[in-house]
Image (cartoon, rainbow, N blue to C red; front, side):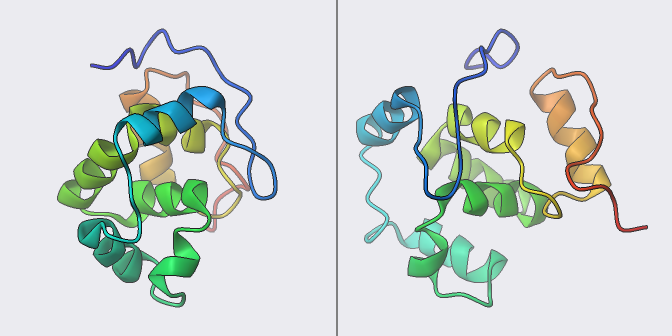
Length: 125
């Protein structure tokens, strides 16, 4: 299962920072070409309807978080196959406040074999 449990935490940072080299290598090895990947474009259009797909895909970690929270099972599988489980885990470990709901937050902790921690940014009860 792609080493979900024994995964060391990489120095993954968001926004104007960088992807770890391992994630970049995974993206290159999978030959991800966002301009031509129609499925990813469709998912981006549906999950982040207030932005254009090109704009959404400029911030891949944010897109991955949206997919893990709002995506259907099939969409999450497509995203995982395209970007890899490493990128999903990195995005989750560095979640921006306010994206994950409590149900998705708990689910992904179980998937990645992580101890439960407080919801990033708290919950909107």
